[in-house]
Image 1 (tube, rainbow, N blue to C red):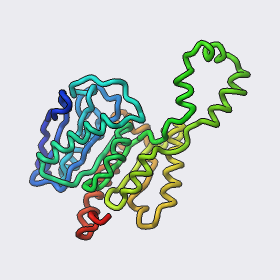
Image 2 (cartoon, helix red, strand yellow):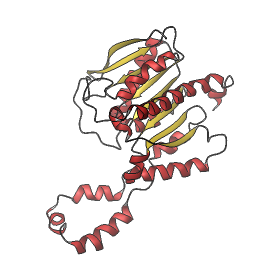
Image 3 (cartoon, rainbow, N blue to C red):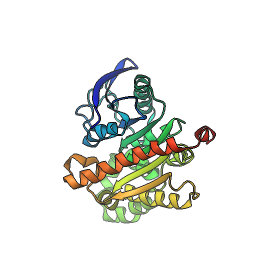
Image 4 (cartoon, rainbow, N blue to C red):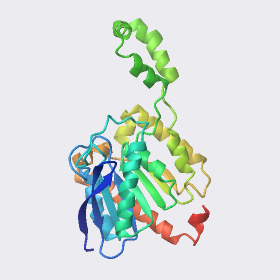
Length: 290
């Protein structure tokens, strides 16, 4: 078994410190995996069990990894305002700060990203970096909020809305038609932008069958991404995909039975290892030209 070392670090950023744990293999790494959490984990670094268990397995394959907490979560300092789904810039800047620090420390250029939920939106933006070889996104929220969500948030607590909420006729003839007309259906532009990076970066979106069956937004994302995959050129189809795993919701990895945990863990580790292997096999200069 490869000698695996774990090193806790704190990366200075905007007057605070971002907490992270770096896992490194024996010898110089082949690459680095950046692990990004969702926006609701509030325990300690690496509290998403999948990433904690994936790190030593990646090290056995010669890959370093770093799992981090955003500001206001886990052991990172600095409070943060409530996360807004469409605003990824603060999290993106934090992820890039940790990535830059660890890449210098382990002396690698190429990196991949593994993410949970909200982190998937950050990862899709980071595929624009030419050194990125892939992003695997677990249960990401990929349907942009449209007019219905904005309308509901603006007026849901108004006195008029409260008075009308109990009217069956109002719900049937006003609310339901508006919801159908203004409902969110299209995936975020981050997905379309990431498709443009398939020359050097693979992308895989994972949902569980249970959440895709019960969550209307994940169901829409599954349908839209499957349709997008079908329209790709043959040379790109191996670079972009969506899969449904026969498990419980992926955010609850620590609550899954052992066989389901192994299925998800194997999928993530094999896919990340394969992303670096593809990059290593690419002809010289191919990525620079892509």
